[in-house]
Every structure is written in structure tokens, then in C-alpha cells.
Image (cartoon, rainbow, N blue to C red; front, side, top):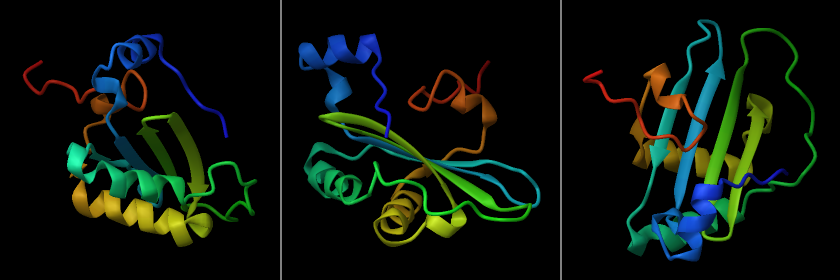
Length: 133
């Protein structure tokens, strides 16, 4: 599984900055209408161990099982930033099981939903677009 590093994040990590906070983003795309949905959770420090455990239980490096056949299937993209890793994985609906399903459902239940496509500009951890612009 490829890990992503942002030089600004690296500098903040070295200085003990905000980038060490846990951040998880789930994006569901595809389906009949082709509309993307996005959920985001950035837990309080007291809740971070629970979320880190959910992230660590997922098989980030496992090879894909099998792609879904047919049109109009959902694709799930999971981005997770935890203190020692910046992870990303794309999963078809058929692979959203076990630890993956637990993580995605937890994010969807606890996180804020952002359906504004402008919010995904600038990468998976970009801040939501300012509605005043």
C-alpha cells in the first residue's frame, strides 16, 4: 500500500504540530447516479486510540480480492492519517467487509458528511471549501 507524505506535514510532525492528529476520510463514488459522498472524522485526542485501532486492523497492504463485475457499483476510497502513517486504499463494494466495514461505518456514523465536490480539491486531506467564495 503506498504511503503519501506531504513536506508541510513532515515539517509539522518534526515540530510537534497539528499534523500528528488522526484524520480519516471516506469517499463513496460510483453507483447509478455517479454521485460522490464524503465523510470525515478528526477525533479529539482522547478518542484517537480508538480510531487508530480501527485503522490498524484494516489490511492496507493486502492484494485486491477481486473487482466487482458490472456497472453502477460503488467504489470506496479510505484515507487515514495516524501518527506514524498516511494511508490510502480503494475498495469495491465486494471488499468492504470485516475491519474495512467497521472503519467505514464508524466514520459514516461519527463523521461530518460533505457532498460539496469542491471540498476534495487539493488532495484527500484538503480543508473543505469556504462556502462564502
